[in-house]
Amino acid sequence: MVAQSGFDVLTLPWLDASRQAFLTQLQTQKVPHAQLVGIDSAYGGELLSVFMARAAMCSQPTPTGGCGFCKSCQLFDAGNHPDFYQIEADGHQIKVDQIRELCTRLSSTAQQSGRRVAIIHHSERLNSASANALLKTLEEPGKDTLLLLHSDTPARLMATISSRCQRLPFVAPSKILIKNWLIQQCQIQEDVTWCLSVVGGPLKLAESLLKDGTQPSRYQTLLGFRKDWAQSLSSGHLCASLLTISEQQIIDALKVLYLLLRQILLKYGDQDAFVQAQIGNLAAKIMGMCHSLSAMPTVNYLGLCQSYVLEYREITNK
Image 1: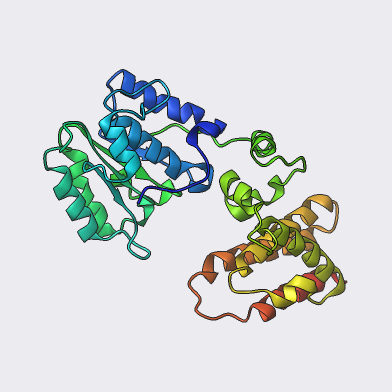
Image 2 (image 1 turned 135 degrees about the vertical axis):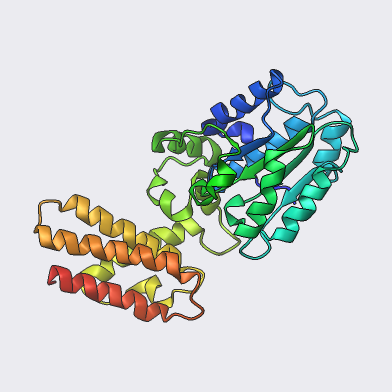
């Protein structure tokens, strides 16, 4: 399945250098057999991978990517190019049978007499067996074969995999660049970048500003959490939206609390060092819980949130 998004890679300025680096490889016919696109999806990593695949398969690529008119581009855009393959995790892992089947397909002759291109989405989910099955193809790729390994967290890839791929250059955008991009794309003037680390990146932040029918947008919900956490820390008991928090909202709510505690540390940097350390430890504890929640089948969210409020109050003796 080709990655879907309401955004075009050409409208993401922080990807300009990465995109141009690949197009230069195409123009100079120096495309490596394997590229690691270590860019989070929330910054456009998956969109860029698909853009690269389309350009690599185009019979007449232009300085801005695939031409859009050749048979290869038309097949690609229709979602049925016979020489384009995509691998996505089966559950939480990319399994060995998926990679073995891909390697078999890549060893066959291209049906359109061009490149055979494969994207492995979220390649950090390769398990040890599937990673080892991929090694031979990475070491001995077939002619005119391009493997694109996309990863939100490339540091989690096995060293034997990442060392056999050429890393696509990428520099994370500044908050100022993201803010200006949001002004253009979403027609907003206020600075909403405070919650970037909560939603994951600029694309997710832009999506969070959109309303779903009569429901508040995700961004409005995050603003509510920030206000209600501040009131809860002051009063010692949960307030407003935190009293009706859902399973789908708990991680967002805790990440907002983490940011609020970090803000408190910066704002009151001259307070008692022991208190500062304890607040820092509480913030770290909350972030650790965010990482663990996805594996927990049942959690008393109300009790969890109240426990953090009480711990903060005990630390600050309020």
